[in-house]
Image (cartoon, rainbow, N blue to C red; front, side, top):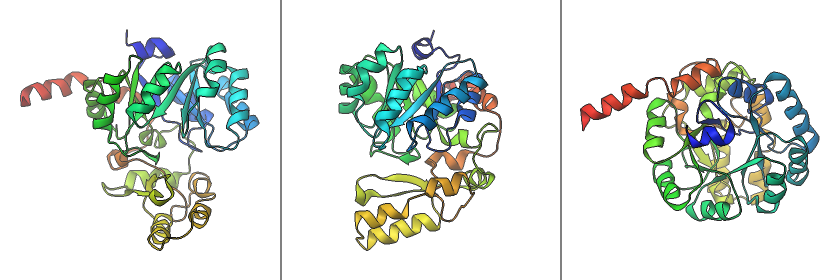
Length: 311
Protein backbone atom coordinates (compact mmCIF):
# COMPACT_ATOMS: atom_id res chain seq x y z
CA UNK A 1 0.00 0.00 0.00
CA UNK A 2 1.14 3.53 -0.73
CA UNK A 3 2.66 4.81 2.52
CA UNK A 4 0.98 8.22 2.27
CA UNK A 5 -2.43 6.56 1.95
CA UNK A 6 -1.57 4.36 4.91
CA UNK A 7 -0.53 7.39 6.95
CA UNK A 8 -3.63 9.50 6.29
CA UNK A 9 -6.24 6.82 5.62
CA UNK A 10 -7.16 7.69 2.03
CA UNK A 11 -7.85 5.65 -1.08
CA UNK A 12 -5.70 7.80 -3.36
CA UNK A 13 -2.36 9.52 -2.60
CA UNK A 14 -3.72 12.98 -3.37
CA UNK A 15 -4.21 15.98 -1.10
CA UNK A 16 -6.25 19.07 -1.92
CA UNK A 17 -4.30 22.29 -1.43
CA UNK A 18 -5.17 24.53 1.51
CA UNK A 19 -6.28 27.54 -0.52
CA UNK A 20 -7.43 30.44 1.65
CA UNK A 21 -11.17 31.16 1.23
CA UNK A 22 -11.45 28.54 -1.56
CA UNK A 23 -10.79 25.49 0.62
CA UNK A 24 -14.01 25.45 2.63
CA UNK A 25 -15.71 22.54 4.39
CA UNK A 26 -17.67 21.83 1.21
CA UNK A 27 -14.57 21.38 -0.94
CA UNK A 28 -12.65 19.47 1.73
CA UNK A 29 -15.55 17.05 2.19
CA UNK A 30 -15.92 16.65 -1.56
CA UNK A 31 -12.29 15.65 -1.96
CA UNK A 32 -12.34 13.33 1.05
CA UNK A 33 -15.55 11.65 -0.12
CA UNK A 34 -13.86 11.06 -3.48
CA UNK A 35 -10.95 9.22 -1.87
CA UNK A 36 -8.39 12.00 -1.38
CA UNK A 37 -7.58 14.14 1.62
CA UNK A 38 -9.54 17.38 1.74
CA UNK A 39 -8.13 20.34 3.64
CA UNK A 40 -10.03 23.24 5.18
CA UNK A 41 -7.96 26.41 4.86
CA UNK A 42 -7.85 28.41 8.08
CA UNK A 43 -6.28 31.35 6.24
CA UNK A 44 -6.67 34.46 8.36
CA UNK A 45 -9.84 33.27 10.12
CA UNK A 46 -10.19 33.23 13.92
CA UNK A 47 -10.39 29.98 15.85
CA UNK A 48 -14.17 29.72 16.21
CA UNK A 49 -14.69 30.16 12.48
CA UNK A 50 -12.30 27.27 11.89
CA UNK A 51 -14.16 25.21 14.50
CA UNK A 52 -17.43 25.82 12.65
CA UNK A 53 -15.81 24.70 9.41
CA UNK A 54 -14.50 21.50 11.01
CA UNK A 55 -17.91 20.71 12.47
CA UNK A 56 -19.59 21.42 9.14
CA UNK A 57 -17.13 19.17 7.31
CA UNK A 58 -18.00 16.34 9.70
CA UNK A 59 -21.64 16.62 8.65
CA UNK A 60 -20.60 16.23 5.00
CA UNK A 61 -18.11 13.37 5.21
CA UNK A 62 -17.12 10.50 7.47
CA UNK A 63 -13.72 10.24 5.77
CA UNK A 64 -10.43 11.72 7.03
CA UNK A 65 -9.86 15.42 6.36
CA UNK A 66 -7.48 18.07 7.60
CA UNK A 67 -6.93 21.76 8.23
CA UNK A 68 -4.30 23.98 6.65
CA UNK A 69 -2.94 26.62 9.03
CA UNK A 70 -1.14 29.72 7.82
CA UNK A 71 1.26 30.32 10.70
CA UNK A 72 1.68 34.01 9.90
CA UNK A 73 -2.01 34.55 10.71
CA UNK A 74 -2.63 36.61 13.87
CA UNK A 75 -5.05 33.85 14.90
CA UNK A 76 -2.62 30.95 14.42
CA UNK A 77 -2.32 30.26 18.17
CA UNK A 78 -6.06 30.00 18.78
CA UNK A 79 -6.61 28.07 15.55
CA UNK A 80 -4.07 25.48 16.66
CA UNK A 81 -5.85 25.15 19.99
CA UNK A 82 -9.15 24.55 18.19
CA UNK A 83 -7.49 21.91 16.02
CA UNK A 84 -6.06 20.15 19.07
CA UNK A 85 -9.54 20.11 20.61
CA UNK A 86 -11.40 19.06 17.45
CA UNK A 87 -8.80 16.51 16.27
CA UNK A 88 -9.07 16.43 12.47
CA UNK A 89 -6.93 13.71 10.93
CA UNK A 90 -4.22 16.03 9.59
CA UNK A 91 -2.88 19.52 10.00
CA UNK A 92 -0.87 21.03 7.15
CA UNK A 93 1.06 24.22 7.87
CA UNK A 94 2.49 27.01 5.77
CA UNK A 95 4.23 30.37 6.15
CA UNK A 96 6.25 29.44 9.21
CA UNK A 97 7.64 26.74 11.48
CA UNK A 98 5.05 24.65 13.39
CA UNK A 99 7.67 23.31 15.80
CA UNK A 100 6.16 24.78 18.95
CA UNK A 101 2.83 23.06 18.24
CA UNK A 102 4.26 19.71 17.19
CA UNK A 103 4.18 17.92 20.54
CA UNK A 104 0.59 18.91 21.34
CA UNK A 105 -0.66 18.05 17.85
CA UNK A 106 0.94 14.63 17.87
CA UNK A 107 -0.30 13.98 21.41
CA UNK A 108 -3.81 14.61 20.07
CA UNK A 109 -3.25 11.98 17.38
CA UNK A 110 -3.08 14.50 14.54
CA UNK A 111 -0.71 13.91 11.64
CA UNK A 112 1.47 16.95 10.91
CA UNK A 113 2.42 17.80 7.32
CA UNK A 114 4.24 21.12 6.85
CA UNK A 115 4.52 22.76 3.44
CA UNK A 116 8.21 23.32 2.70
CA UNK A 117 10.03 25.18 -0.06
CA UNK A 118 13.61 24.13 0.73
CA UNK A 119 15.65 21.08 1.68
CA UNK A 120 16.78 22.73 4.91
CA UNK A 121 13.20 23.28 6.05
CA UNK A 122 12.22 19.72 5.15
CA UNK A 123 15.07 18.29 7.22
CA UNK A 124 14.19 20.56 10.14
CA UNK A 125 10.55 19.47 10.03
CA UNK A 126 11.54 15.80 10.02
CA UNK A 127 13.75 16.33 13.06
CA UNK A 128 10.92 18.11 14.86
CA UNK A 129 8.59 15.14 14.31
CA UNK A 130 6.60 15.90 11.15
CA UNK A 131 4.83 12.85 9.73
CA UNK A 132 5.31 13.98 6.12
CA UNK A 133 6.28 17.12 4.21
CA UNK A 134 4.65 18.83 1.24
CA UNK A 135 7.35 19.97 -1.18
CA UNK A 136 5.78 22.91 -2.97
CA UNK A 137 7.42 24.34 -6.07
CA UNK A 138 7.19 27.90 -7.28
CA UNK A 139 4.63 26.92 -9.97
CA UNK A 140 1.94 26.79 -7.27
CA UNK A 141 -0.68 29.45 -6.65
CA UNK A 142 -0.76 31.71 -3.61
CA UNK A 143 2.34 32.21 -1.45
CA UNK A 144 5.33 30.60 -3.14
CA UNK A 145 9.01 29.81 -2.78
CA UNK A 146 11.70 30.11 -5.44
CA UNK A 147 12.60 26.53 -6.45
CA UNK A 148 10.67 24.69 -9.15
CA UNK A 149 8.74 21.53 -8.38
CA UNK A 150 10.94 19.34 -10.58
CA UNK A 151 14.13 20.48 -8.81
CA UNK A 152 12.76 20.74 -5.29
CA UNK A 153 10.97 17.39 -5.02
CA UNK A 154 13.84 14.97 -5.72
CA UNK A 155 16.20 16.92 -3.47
CA UNK A 156 13.76 16.69 -0.58
CA UNK A 157 13.05 13.01 -1.32
CA UNK A 158 16.79 12.34 -1.02
CA UNK A 159 17.10 14.38 2.18
CA UNK A 160 14.35 12.90 4.39
CA UNK A 161 12.95 9.49 5.31
CA UNK A 162 9.33 10.56 5.88
CA UNK A 163 6.78 10.64 3.01
CA UNK A 164 7.08 13.53 0.58
CA UNK A 165 4.07 15.04 -1.17
CA UNK A 166 4.84 16.86 -4.42
CA UNK A 167 2.96 20.13 -5.05
CA UNK A 168 2.97 22.90 -7.62
CA UNK A 169 1.92 22.68 -11.26
CA UNK A 170 0.37 19.21 -11.20
CA UNK A 171 -2.64 19.52 -13.49
CA UNK A 172 -3.20 16.00 -14.79
CA UNK A 173 -2.05 12.39 -14.84
CA UNK A 174 1.18 13.35 -16.64
CA UNK A 175 2.11 15.62 -13.74
CA UNK A 176 1.22 12.88 -11.27
CA UNK A 177 3.45 10.37 -13.06
CA UNK A 178 6.28 12.92 -13.08
CA UNK A 179 5.85 13.50 -9.34
CA UNK A 180 6.05 9.80 -8.56
CA UNK A 181 9.05 9.44 -10.89
CA UNK A 182 10.77 12.14 -8.82
CA UNK A 183 10.28 9.95 -5.74
CA UNK A 184 7.18 11.55 -4.20
CA UNK A 185 4.72 9.43 -2.23
CA UNK A 186 1.76 11.59 -3.21
CA UNK A 187 0.64 14.79 -4.87
CA UNK A 188 -1.07 17.96 -3.70
CA UNK A 189 -3.43 19.67 -6.11
CA UNK A 190 -4.88 23.14 -5.63
CA UNK A 191 -5.74 25.08 -8.77
CA UNK A 192 -7.68 22.31 -10.50
CA UNK A 193 -9.96 21.87 -7.49
CA UNK A 194 -11.04 25.52 -7.77
CA UNK A 195 -12.98 24.31 -10.81
CA UNK A 196 -14.78 21.50 -9.03
CA UNK A 197 -18.53 21.27 -8.52
CA UNK A 198 -18.03 21.13 -4.76
CA UNK A 199 -15.98 24.32 -4.60
CA UNK A 200 -18.25 27.22 -3.63
CA UNK A 201 -16.06 29.92 -5.18
CA UNK A 202 -17.87 32.45 -7.37
CA UNK A 203 -18.47 31.29 -10.93
CA UNK A 204 -16.45 34.26 -12.22
CA UNK A 205 -13.38 32.97 -10.34
CA UNK A 206 -13.79 29.51 -11.85
CA UNK A 207 -14.23 30.90 -15.34
CA UNK A 208 -11.11 33.06 -14.92
CA UNK A 209 -9.12 29.89 -14.21
CA UNK A 210 -10.62 28.10 -17.22
CA UNK A 211 -9.86 31.05 -19.51
CA UNK A 212 -6.28 31.44 -18.25
CA UNK A 213 -3.43 31.11 -20.73
CA UNK A 214 0.10 29.87 -20.14
CA UNK A 215 1.54 33.23 -18.99
CA UNK A 216 -1.43 34.50 -17.00
CA UNK A 217 -0.36 33.25 -13.55
CA UNK A 218 1.99 36.03 -12.46
CA UNK A 219 3.95 36.75 -9.28
CA UNK A 220 3.66 39.94 -7.25
CA UNK A 221 5.07 40.91 -3.88
CA UNK A 222 8.67 39.83 -4.38
CA UNK A 223 9.82 43.20 -3.03
CA UNK A 224 7.98 42.54 0.24
CA UNK A 225 9.56 39.13 0.77
CA UNK A 226 6.17 37.41 0.47
CA UNK A 227 5.65 36.64 -3.24
CA UNK A 228 2.20 35.52 -4.35
CA UNK A 229 1.11 33.93 -7.61
CA UNK A 230 -2.30 34.91 -9.02
CA UNK A 231 -3.95 35.40 -12.38
CA UNK A 232 -3.07 38.75 -13.90
CA UNK A 233 -5.72 41.45 -13.77
CA UNK A 234 -6.07 45.07 -12.74
CA UNK A 235 -5.02 44.22 -9.18
CA UNK A 236 -1.76 42.48 -10.17
CA UNK A 237 -0.92 45.34 -12.54
CA UNK A 238 -1.42 47.81 -9.67
CA UNK A 239 0.84 45.68 -7.47
CA UNK A 240 3.51 45.73 -10.16
CA UNK A 241 3.20 49.49 -10.55
CA UNK A 242 3.66 50.08 -6.82
CA UNK A 243 6.63 47.75 -6.67
CA UNK A 244 8.29 49.43 -9.67
CA UNK A 245 7.86 52.78 -7.91
CA UNK A 246 9.41 51.40 -4.69
CA UNK A 247 6.25 52.01 -2.71
CA UNK A 248 6.33 51.28 1.01
CA UNK A 249 5.62 47.80 2.36
CA UNK A 250 2.50 49.15 4.06
CA UNK A 251 1.12 50.63 0.83
CA UNK A 252 1.69 47.41 -1.09
CA UNK A 253 0.16 45.31 1.67
CA UNK A 254 -2.88 47.56 1.95
CA UNK A 255 -3.64 47.06 -1.73
CA UNK A 256 -4.25 43.37 -1.11
CA UNK A 257 -6.61 43.72 1.85
CA UNK A 258 -9.86 41.94 1.02
CA UNK A 259 -8.57 40.76 -2.35
CA UNK A 260 -9.35 37.09 -1.85
CA UNK A 261 -12.85 37.83 -0.58
CA UNK A 262 -13.51 40.03 -3.61
CA UNK A 263 -12.51 37.19 -5.93
CA UNK A 264 -14.05 34.25 -4.09
CA UNK A 265 -17.25 35.78 -2.77
CA UNK A 266 -18.00 38.75 -5.01
CA UNK A 267 -16.63 37.39 -8.28
CA UNK A 268 -14.58 40.54 -8.88
CA UNK A 269 -12.10 39.39 -11.51
CA UNK A 270 -10.44 42.80 -11.87
CA UNK A 271 -9.65 43.85 -8.29
CA UNK A 272 -9.98 40.43 -6.69
CA UNK A 273 -6.94 38.27 -5.94
CA UNK A 274 -7.44 35.31 -8.28
CA UNK A 275 -4.85 33.08 -6.67
CA UNK A 276 -3.99 30.20 -8.99
CA UNK A 277 -0.91 28.33 -10.13
CA UNK A 278 0.75 28.03 -13.51
CA UNK A 279 -1.32 24.90 -14.14
CA UNK A 280 -4.42 27.10 -14.54
CA UNK A 281 -3.94 27.09 -18.30
CA UNK A 282 -4.41 23.30 -18.25
CA UNK A 283 -7.77 23.43 -16.46
CA UNK A 284 -10.52 23.28 -19.07
CA UNK A 285 -13.79 22.49 -17.30
CA UNK A 286 -15.75 22.36 -14.06
CA UNK A 287 -16.32 18.80 -12.85
CA UNK A 288 -16.93 16.76 -9.67
CA UNK A 289 -14.04 16.12 -7.28
CA UNK A 290 -14.43 12.38 -7.90
CA UNK A 291 -13.81 12.83 -11.63
CA UNK A 292 -10.85 15.11 -11.01
CA UNK A 293 -9.20 12.64 -8.65
CA UNK A 294 -9.79 9.62 -10.87
CA UNK A 295 -8.28 11.47 -13.83
CA UNK A 296 -4.95 11.66 -11.99
CA UNK A 297 -4.71 7.89 -11.62
CA UNK A 298 -6.84 6.10 -14.21
CA UNK A 299 -4.55 6.54 -17.24
CA UNK A 300 -1.15 6.00 -15.61
CA UNK A 301 -0.48 2.87 -17.69
CA UNK A 302 -1.14 4.77 -20.91
CA UNK A 303 1.27 7.52 -19.86
CA UNK A 304 3.96 4.99 -18.93
CA UNK A 305 3.43 3.15 -22.21
CA UNK A 306 3.90 6.40 -24.11
CA UNK A 307 7.11 7.07 -22.18
CA UNK A 308 8.50 3.64 -23.08
CA UNK A 309 7.77 4.24 -26.74
CA UNK A 310 9.77 7.46 -26.69
CA UNK A 311 12.91 6.22 -24.95
